[in-house]
Length: 147
Image (cartoon, rainbow, N blue to C red; front, side):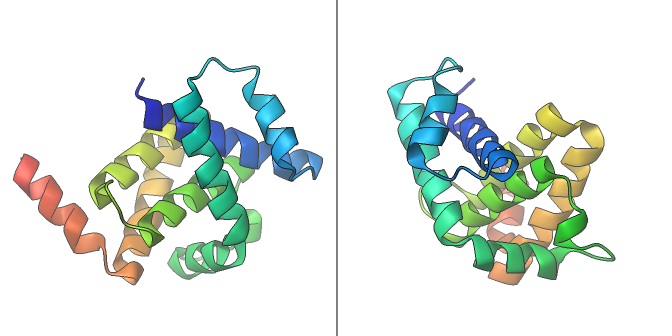
C-alpha cells in the first residue's frame, strides 16, 4: 500500500474516532496512529488531511449535502461521511494529485471499510462534488487518456 493511501486511511480513522469520542485533539488522533503501522511521511500527510477537514468541515459538509440526492448528511454512515470529507477536501485543494486519483483512492477506502456498495455510493457523491467544483472534466480526461 502506498504512503498516501495509508495516510488517507489514517485520516479517515482519526476523523471517525473524533466523532465517536468527541476528542478532536491532535494528541488524540496521533495516539490512534500508534496502533497502526505507518511511516512518518504517512502520518504527516494524514495530519494535513485531518487538520484541513477540521478547519473546513462546515464547507465540506455543505458540499456533500449539495451532492446528495434524496439523502441527508445526518443519515450517512460516519465512515462514508469521513471518506467523503477527506475526498472533498482534496478536490477543493487541487495540487499534485489528479482528480481521478482522489476519486479512486476514496472509492477504495470506502470499499475497504464499508464494502462494495459504500464504494459505489462514494463514487457517485464525489463525482458530483467534482462537477460542482469544476474539476470533473480533469478526472474524465485522465480516465480517457489511460484507456
